Image (cartoon, rainbow, N blue to C red; front, side, top):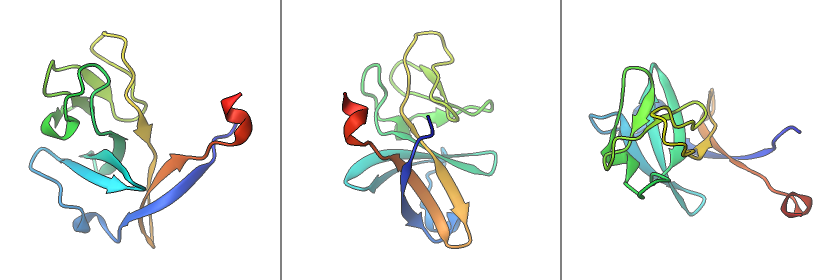
Length: 117
């Protein structure tokens, strides 16, 4: 099944996003706080808090392998797919980010009525 997304513009360019020195940023879009991460010339979107102990992910860091490291217990999450790479079995919610000539956009999955059945 193909996922459908509703896309929200978050910036005209990457330079408009005020990333901290750790390449992380808290951003609010569609009435939802999310974490934006920058790694290897890409921007990634994920949950605001760690699924384990609710640590604020933007207070962590991105390692050289592209894992987002939670500041509380150092759990690691792959920015591409949200997989927990340190072995605890948690999953981090991720959001697709795309860059176009019109700007940078983040996608939220559209859910239909039958998705809840």
